[in-house]
Image 1 (spheres, helix red, strand yellow):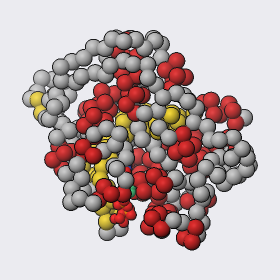
Image 2 (spheres, helix red, strand yellow):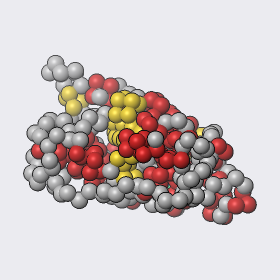
Image 3 (tube, helix red, strand yellow):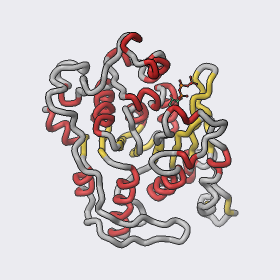
Image 4 (tube, protein in one colour):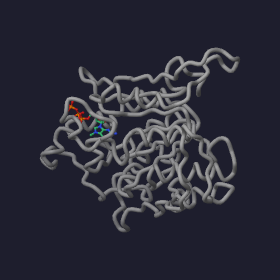
Length: 320
Ligand code: MGP
């Protein structure tokens, strides 16, 4: 049972691209304002299985052994078990996952970067669609929320451990079957998808993706050390490059950025893009695309900003 289910939603990139009709080759078509990627067969391609013997019976209980990541990271139940630098995050554990006590698992990066559940839910509400790509899924906070509002979630991460934790957490919520977990770097994944598209000469990506959600590493908790955060600090590439790639897949991008991000940096993501015609196709005046920036409040604090582009921004639904 476990094996069959794993095959359906834990795909390696090679299996993913086998689903595409045409083989990937080396030519692309590139417009001057939207350079397309070079096609290279450099995929991340190993199955993100936790070490054997770690998941016999665990926090997910009987019947879920295949998805159970118990033992990969500590499951803290008492502040006394938690390292000093993670204490402030542990204190907020039920904000991150309201069902934390039932056995949600986070690694160190997950503790300081998971999107709190209420915020993930708000973003997922705005991102209702058929297929959403969560480009940096981490331990799964956003992917789980998307699984409630979207037909299908593609969740990428480059860490086998984090991907296993995300799947564990999704299984705990009964939502793992709605999420396709892929061990891959977003840039590699997007490039391969775009190359497959150019090979088939299709005008849209070889696989339908309605929305890309970008929540990359911000460089650790130190992101708040300066008065302003520059999007050039975003990992593993500056935000401009992540955004450019995402926009080649779909106009609809939600970008989760630090609360102290320079607004000029967010606005600067747009000018290089073409003007969009906002009259619904009838020859009206061209209007520059807008970005909508949403402050994500929890209690009396703004925790982060979500920037909505394309058809996700209010008033631009026609761009979806
Ligand atoms: P925070 O300010 O580091 O923590 O992160 P805290 O304790 O919530 O805030 P404080 O005001 O009490 O100090 C706030 C939120 O930003 C986290 O809950 C995450 O959702 C998000 N976040 C933080 N980091 C370091 C990252 C990151 O590297 N990447 C992403 N995508 N989100 C992050």
